[in-house]
Length: 442
Image 1 (cartoon, one colour):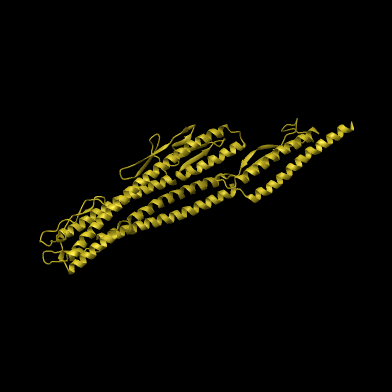
Image 2 (spheres, rainbow, N blue to C red):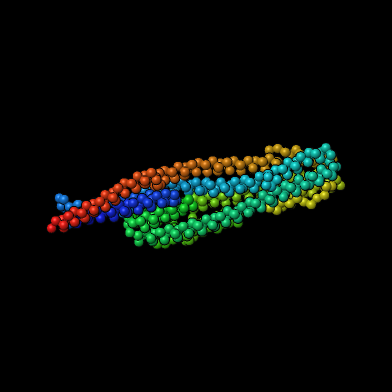
């Protein structure tokens, strides 16, 4: 009867733990990063038996072999890789959309100012002495200069914003590295197959998911599940051998970002939000340089055209603009009479020449072409983001199909183990009743 009692007791322990595991699954059905757990049961060796020699009839009951997590290493790696690509594309698109907004006519009015300048020049050809039109011409020039300064200011603020976001994301990345090392310490101390180990493995995977979404890293796991992280591009250690090597970020004068490890080696990544921020910073820097070039080219063209004519007093035309960059471009403080509408042969000849500038290389068409290029780049980034998001969603769904909680399945297992628990309890009851019958008959 002692064997029967022991078998029943082992069943109660095992099925009670199984019911608790299912209850844990149900309770965490909506918990992000929780991987479904199942209890691993195995036959218990009977007393006196060995692995090689067993008695003919000596059942030993059941024992708990540990807790298994429902995970697929390949699907997890694929999900992390696609998540990093999606974060990079989304981060890059966010800032490119802001650049497009900063360059739009609704924000700076450059396109409207250029159109107004040339339209007013056309009107002055018919009435070159009209002081109202001359004032409108000067106002259009001031609007253009103001628009360039506005766009330059917004792009400068945007560069600061990208740098600030990169600094914050770097701090978050380093905090995740520190947290991962703490999980590694816990895993090395945890009892294999325990609930504590399963919880630590879930948290490890959550941290690795976040880190992979921030930057490209190579991950390796030891026999206890502790993770070693290296920079994917260079192989430099980030977490391993009980050490954590944080990264840093600096912004150059033009806003471009440079990441480095604590040893001073460049930290390069082609995926993750940090890669997206780096590409965004490069794009903003390129746009600032292009804006300065356009402002200088525009000022040079218009100044040369205006200085080729004569004002109302017969003096040579003065420069309409000062400054060589978008941030310093300013309309000169001229009076209406100083508008150089005339040339050497007629009172409206210079306005005719200025109006004739409209064509493939005039400031108006160059600015329109620049906006079109930016719009195309943003549209391309939007398409890349859509593709990367679709890919990441599919990979996450495939991963979740293995790890997520199916409440119907859990309900079925709950009934199955509940019946098994009742049967084990009945076994103990039968053993007790049999023992009482034997003792009573003596």
